Structures are given as C-alpha cells and as structure tokens.
Amino acid sequence: MVTAELTGSGWVIVGLTSILAAVGLLVAAMHPSASSLEKWARRYGVALTDRNREMVARYLRRTRTLQVVGATLGWLLSPVYIGVFGRPLPLGDNWVALAVGGYLVGAVAAEASFLRPRRVPGAIRAATLSPRSPADYVSPATIWSIRLLPLVTVALAGTYAVIPKDPLRAVDPSVTYLAVASLLIVAFALAADWILRAIVARPQPAISEDLVAADDALRACSMHGLAAAVVALILLSSGWALVSVGMVTSVSGLGQALIWLGFITDILAVGAWIGLSHPRRWRVQRERPLVSAR
Amino acid sequence: MPPYDQIRSQLVTIIATGMLPAGQRLPTIRQLAADLGLAGGTVARAFRELELGGFITTRGRHGTFIAERPPASAVDREQALVAAASAFAVQAAAAGVDPRRVLERALDGLRSSGDATARA
Image 1 (cartoon, rainbow over the protein chains, first blue to last red):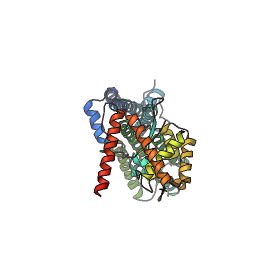
Image 2 (tube, chains in turn orange, red; image 1 turned 180 degrees about the vertical axis):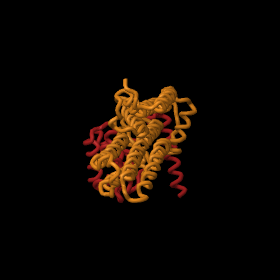
Image 3 (cartoon, rainbow over the protein chains, first blue to last red; image 1 turned 45 degrees about the horizontal axis):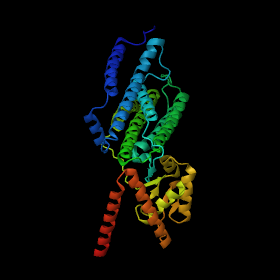
C-alpha cells in the first residue's frame, strides 16, 4: 500500500474525521428524541400527531444517516484514494467539495428511498386543490441561485480563455478543462432543478390533514438539504474558477484580488451549505379544499 | 358516477360556492392525477368539460385558472348543491364520523346560516 503522498497531519485529520463521523452516524441512526422531533416540527411549522410522528421520525433517521454516510465517504474519498493508489483522485482533491457531493448523494438517496404514506386500496382518493411548486418549499432566492450561479462559472471560464496570462506560470488547468467543467456545472444545475421539481411532483394523496402537513414539511426538509448542497457545490466551483483565473493572470493586482475572492467564495459555500440546509423557520402554506374520487 | 364526473362536479361546487376564488390557479393535470392515483386522461377530461362549461380557463404554460365569471344558472346551482352534498358525505365518511352526528352538524350549520340571512 502506497501512503507516501499523504502527510502525517493528513492522516491525523482522516483519523479525527472518522471518529467524528462514527459518532455522528451513531447519533443519526438512533431514533430521534421527542425534543429533537418537536424542534424540527417547530422549525417547519407542523403539528406532530400520533399519525405523523412516526413518519417524521423514520424520515429524519433515514435522511440524517444517509447524509452523514455520504458526507463522510466523500470527505475520506480523496485521502483513501491517495493512500491506496499513490496518486491524486481524478475527481480532484477538494475534500470539502467531495464531502458536500457525498452529502448530496446521500440526501438524494434518502428522498428517493423514503416511502410516503399511500392510499389504502379501496379507500376514497383525495387530493388538495393546491398547485405545488418548488417555491412553496424552498426560497425563490435559493432556486434562482441554482439557476444563475452556474453562469458565473461559465463567465469565469470565458475570462480564463481571454485574460492576459503570465508567461512564467503554467496554465493549469487548461482552458479546455475549465470550459468543459463550467458546462458540466450548468448541466449539474439543470439536473438539480429537475430533481427539485421531481420531489415536488411526487404523489401526495390527501389521506388526512396532519399527514399532508407532515409530508409537505418533509419535502421542504429534503429540498432544503439538496438545494443547500447544490448551491455550495456551485459556489465551490466558482471559487475554484476564480482562483484559477487569479493564478494565471498577468494583470497587476487582479490576480491576488481574484484569489482572495475565490477563498471568500469557498467560505460562502460552506456557509450556504450549513445555512440553507437548516433554515430557522420554513412553513409550507397549504389551505385549500379537497377533491376526491371513489 | 365515473371518476372524471366526480372531479368535475366537485370542482363545479367549489367554484360555484366561491371556495376557490376567480383567477385562482389549479394544480396541473399531472399533479392532480398523481395525487388521486388516477390516469392523466381522467383528470384531463374533467378539466376539458369544466373549460367547455366556462368554469375554468387554460392559459397555456401558465396553467389552469378559475374563470373570472363562472356560470351560475339555476341548473348549475342545483348541480352544485348535489355535488356539495356528495362531497360533504364523502369527506364525512373519510373522517369516520358517526352519520347521525354529521347530520346534526349539517342541520346546525343550515340553521345558523339561515339565522344569519334572516338577521341580514
């Protein structure tokens, strides 16, 4: 096994992270406490009842577990790859971005595998007459961030191609690499937008008012987690592009400014991940008459 | 009554009684069909008939909306009354409430609305 490329401090970070992740996983995998459930319910403005409490607990347990597993695997992917293969991970060595990516995969897996309450066969079919849209579940600012921020990366890729370059510095990554990466970010954002719409479009039979309210809150929670990770990843990509432009430019003063801006964008990305995935309060409004069919 | 007709008549009631105001957007056919566990064609047929009846309007990609001036002829009112009673019965049955209690509450509601009308 080749371990030469990862320093001693690197392994210390890996070890500490693994311990933290194991603790986090244990906490996430446990049945949420009553106070934790109440706190979550207050945040999403939903009243817990005997019927929806277990569904919420099951959702939180599954989602938190898969998110922690995903983030941990993402975080450890690069050092483990280096340790095993002795060369950098082809996906890049940004541990934070890989952790956010892993969290995103975990969040998607949790939402996709969570079974919502279904109509009992033979029971009356009922649905609310309230149109659902992503803006009911996450803020319009978040949605527009997902749609518009990738364009910043595209603009930076364009800038990277035309900006006067310092002949003493190697153009790394290549112009083509950054251009392709920026287009992949656009495709990623489009896919994320589609996933958010797909979550909104999942069937929501109006079995009872409390189950519908809880289901709306769960959708909002899922979408906040996903959107937060997506915004964070796009911001991290923008930060990387900013630093790349800053590193090659020969324009005096601009290089340092762009590199600092890149670091600030990275910090913003982590802030967005934490802040957007845990809104202080979010209430899905849905007070409409029902329509039913036998 | 076929499912599309149940949806149509309930929507007529909801619109005629003003439970959904004019200009209000309705869910898409796909959403309503998925939530009800029905085929899209069933909901589409209900919407088509409602549009022909002047209850709703479709504005292309923007969606389907309650018409600004839904028809309110005597026939529609009678139809609305029947559909309202039917919807009430369906919801009461879904809630699992004792039918006698449901009737008592309905009579109470009628009496109080009659008193309010008389006072007005």
